[in-house]
Image (tube, rainbow, N blue to C red; front, side, top):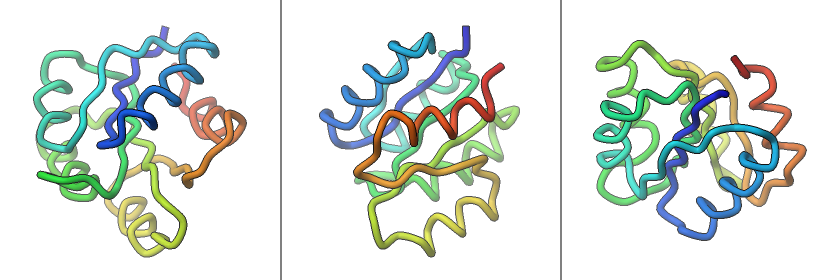
Length: 119
């Protein structure tokens, strides 16, 4: 089963993603509310896929992605962005994100991105 780490500062978004992922037979191994906490969890949980919000306190998704690229064997990263963050999404793709979903999202949007990467 593909292991997923959900990183978003909004508890509601984490809960919504977790429900979608578990319904579709992904193993949600953990959650983090900012990029700093995500780095700590990646180190111990070794997820296959990271769902990473762009706008978060402490460490945003772009900075977190840069650190992931430096520290880990590049797990697949799907960025989560709000409407109007296209420049951030382009930057994230340029530095290694494998896909993105835009808030508000539907289950089909999430699964389209994840099924491209499913191990």
